[in-house]
Image (cartoon, rainbow, N blue to C red; front, top):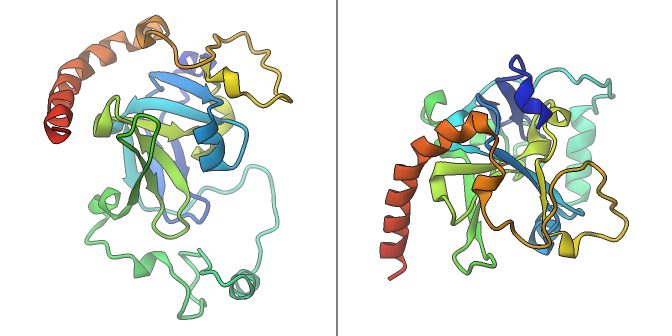
Length: 234
């Protein structure tokens, strides 16, 4: 929760690996999960997921170049990336490369009427979930990297942002560990944060005082969403 004490930290910026999608996170998360469930393990191909829960209105999708790397890394030549893409029967996700082969998909190939409609150009895929209703993952339409998800608890009103897509992901630590019953045996949790074998009983017990006003603003919208959801499921 140290991120909430750094008033100068926000807005934070993030994006997908290929740089086609950039976004801005305007407010601190309401809560940050470290989820050890098997669904997250399967989706990400790793041991756990760190998701920042925040209002959808707190995220702005925009165009723009990715920031310079803080840790210097050699930038592969575009021709090498395209050559490897050919060998692996893939499309090279290099949105700003003017020398790409015609077969490679780039940002200019993705229909977009204006920068204001950048959010509409995102790829949304609903996959099966334990609830039976589904989970919608929002992805870059070029490199297909997942950026955030919507779950049945709040639908389009709330985003579960994949913290690793932030440029300064190390600034956001988990507030709680969930589904530790399926935690991988080599992971030892020693951060002192609350742990639950499944999901926690009541999220209200985990909110910090600074976000309670934001939670109250969400409540009537959540009630309307739940009414729409019930009607849609009849």
